[in-house]
Length: 173
Image 1 (cartoon, rainbow, N blue to C red):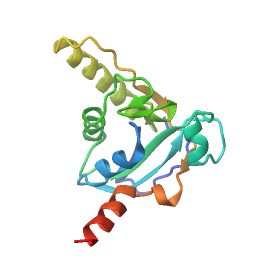
Image 2: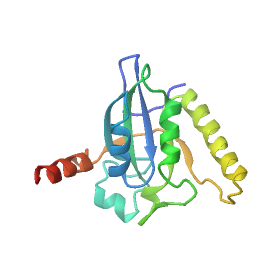
Image 3: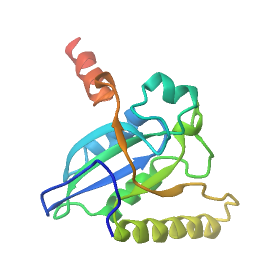
Image 4: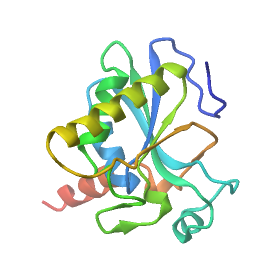
């Protein structure tokens, strides 16, 4: 079952994953460096405003989540691996915040594009909740699993932001 989104992949060896896990700068850099990831873009998904700007999303009025979209080669990395990376690189038990970042735009969210992704996401969420329980950590995972919708690419200066900043920093030496 496909999901209506404006993100399309024409190569049968490629797929797309979409995650919201706090500020999209760090999320993009994290996934960008994984073997098998072909491209990443950051943007906004899940809100009601058409073509939102970063400033509008940050005000909290649009309902969008900051997301990273990940185009990956299914023969090199699978969706389950990407889900594992998602879970271990943010706190899925904090509602609408990661670290100092607070607001609905930082919500822990998995946006699925197929029924298979939906089932894998649900299974992985249960596994993570069971792991917390086994570790006697009395916290509930608040990650939302939602159908992917319209993706709005963030402004160009947000794209590969940390890679650009690190490159400029390294050029100083």
